[in-house]
Structure formats: structure tokens, C-alpha cells
Image 1 (cartoon, rainbow, N blue to C red):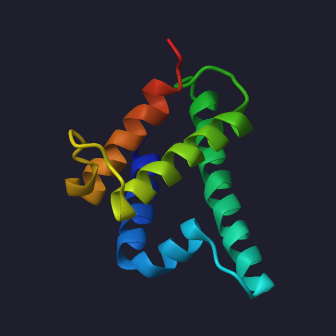
Image 2 (cartoon, rainbow, N blue to C red):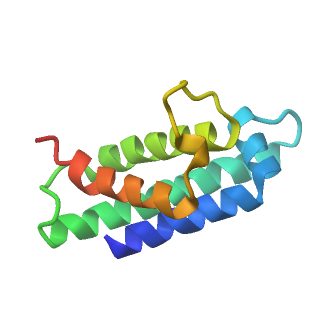
Length: 120
């Protein structure tokens, strides 16, 4: 769980420090095809890191055996959604997403990764 939390903290910190780049990633850009491909490749590498963490957790019997690729895709979608809402909104009136620190967001993501993915 520590490696997952560290990964999320690094991703949230990087995103916070590179807000304008993250806006290009989430909202898309027109033009340079090589830049679009670099964005796709980066997203796939992050998802691959999630999948490796999930596989390792399965090996250690922390998570049940499931489709790690699908689990990683679900986690990636959750991460991108929370990250986008944290950086750019919108958030509901009762939500405190935008006031959370990167460490708090990372902790919540890891809790969901390990306990929410159990599906029980």
C-alpha cells in the first residue's frame, strides 16, 4: 500500500505543479500529432504502474485474483476523474475535493484501491 500511496502523491504533486499541462491532457489539444501520442503514452504508463501494483497486491494475497487490466483501467478512470475535479472542478456543494491536500487525496485513493476494489 505504501508504494501505491507514494505513486499517488507523486502524481497529484506533479499535476498541481503542472496545472496548465494537465489542462491540455484532460481537455485535449489540436495540432501536433506527436504531442497527442506522447499524452496517450503517458496515460498508458500510469495505468501500467497501477496494474503492476494491483498484480503485486494479488501475489501478496492483499487483493483477490481478478482481471488486473480491468481493475487498473477502473482505477485510472477514477484517478483521472478525481484529479480533474480537484484541479478544475466542477464539484458539488457538499464536496471538499478541492480543499484536500495531495497527501489526503493519495490516502483516499489508496484506501479505495485496496478496499473498494474488493467488491465486498
